[in-house]
Length: 439
Image 1 (cartoon, rainbow, N blue to C red):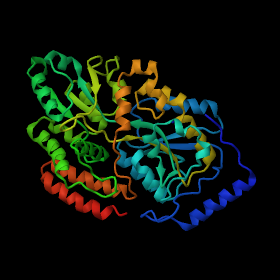
Image 2 (image 1 turned 45 degrees about the vertical axis):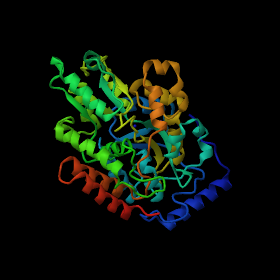
Image 3 (image 1 turned 120 degrees about the vertical axis):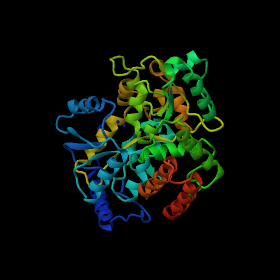
Image 4 (image 1 turned 180 degrees about the horizontal axis):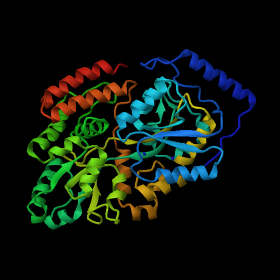
């Protein structure tokens, strides 16, 4: 949640680029994204010196090492980490507040992949000159697509993410069942495992169901895994359908029957991970970073050596992951943008991404790393993870993403907590999204 120096431009190019930046600033930016170009011109990035990297709470424990590697090589251009809250929604809110105040406190922003369009349209991040990032073609195409808005580059993918089903392989083996490929199989598997004396009190399944961005992800996966969509390929919302209803109903019934523990309504990624590591869950939907933490043999995980991963199950067949990951962008109001660009190239390089996956199991964006024999031996899920990422569906790429994800969370949370029916929740959501998403 990623080594080269920027080439110095000729003085004329610098003057032209500066003029274009000033012109873009004078034009301002509207919340609706306006028309024509958004953000700066994508010309040369100027200024060298210390910068600040704004990022969510480092749950991996490796960010300090990555930044230290840069700082040791660039003593005059040191990076200070501004660690924001663990919650993605709170991270986004602080970054937006910083941008609306035109503050230069943040230089490089660690953006959830789905925020790129919103930040670019509002001119909160700088358009990047693609010729200064020559390795873009070596990244997974699905990840690079998340870094662009109106076919222009505004960020660089540093980590990707695909949802995985973590499961207790020891308990499944003892119960004589295989990892599930459908929701119904997962329910049946849990019933068989809970018949074991040592597993009678274990919770069956949990994802991320608190009212925050993780709920948007889990709701989307439930809908997509049932054959539905939240927003179609035509950019129009289409969530009031039998398929979406089937997906949401599976989640609501999970809570009603106890298949999903009541406590899971409060779960973000970390509480769910901790519950799984404590041995309190049989199945758990989470991201690749959990693999390294759950496998630690220092006593922090009670299930080290006892778990494995599988693709997400869908309603009637294999599931569909929501595309996750993080892109690094440069704040439009930052100083020392040339240093910021070099830092992004450093952190997104194959060498840094390899070092990061080896320490954290976070999904890289370099395609070559998924085919690396040594990494596949260490992380046997890499091949299915690559397939998951390549087949993943994105959350809505819209300018008013904050309003859209809030509407999704409110509708899904209402259904999960029983304050509204799944059918009414989807009908209301369709109406709300139709008002928010305009072409």
